[in-house]
Length: 137
Image (cartoon, rainbow, N blue to C red; front, side):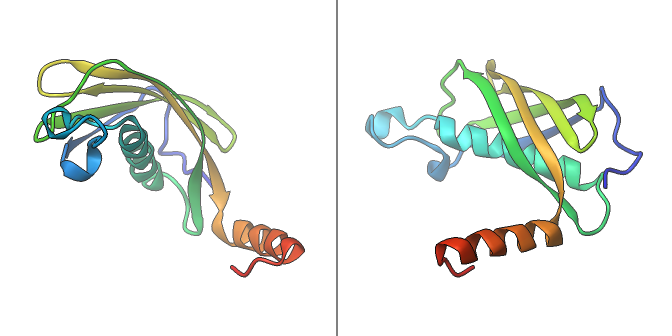
């Protein structure tokens, strides 16, 4: 499912503007800073986009673990660069080392793991689980 184009040590970067939807609101307008849940989503999406270049048709990936330290406040209107490095490939499991930088400093470090799946097989498993509990998918 993973093509032989994916190798440990490879790097991928993506730059994202920190818009209003990516910021917290609970500290008021003066402290509209990058929200940790949004940072995690952006890390996952960055790894997903990169990994999709290296999987066969009909495959995709799901996140299985996130371990980060969000150590700096990024202001509304700034940009972040998310750097991901393929740290380990074990079968269909891929672990990424992650570093995130805003316009001033590094604001995050950690790791994210994804598992490559066959989309049709997952649909079948999800449908079977849904039917057991009476949920329509």
